[in-house]
Amino acid sequence: MKKSRLNLTDVLLITVLVFGIAAIVLRAVHIPLFEPVRDREYAVSFTAQITGEQRASLVTGLILTDNSGRSVKLLEGYWIDETGSGAVMTGDLLMKGRVTESGFLSGSTMYYEGDEVTLTYKDGTVDVTLTGFHER
Image 1 (cartoon, one colour):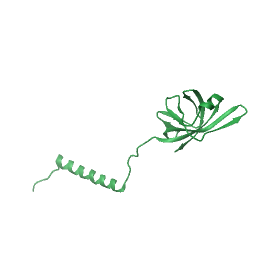
Image 2 (cartoon, helix red, strand yellow; image 1 turned 180 degrees about the vertical axis):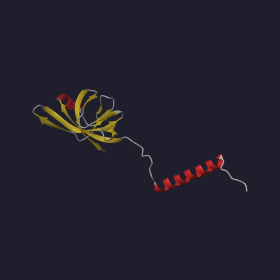
Image 3 (cartoon, one colour; image 1 turned 90 degrees about the vertical axis):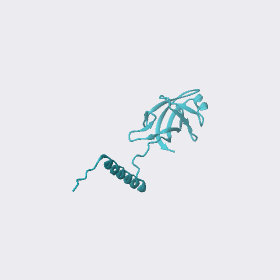
């Protein structure tokens, strides 16, 4: 009686067969092994103490740049409250990123509620305090 042995070709064929069956099973039941991490658009709520000059130049659709060079857009629906010490602007900025367990990640910069961020635009700068992150 002749003794049979597995050679390299047999091992490769068995491996391909096992992986092929596993791929068919995973495809059939739609099990996502890796969900891609994608940046989404978020409305980042803010408040800012503004002057009269800033009030005239901060308009819907204005593109502002933060300290790290990220561009943000002033969204429609902001409002300005007059107080004894000046005007307070409240509204939302459009930013791309994702909310993580520790904060909001946009590019390589992490933002947190309560952060004070200086935003620059063609007519000047404005200091805003971030108050929330909401997916659009």
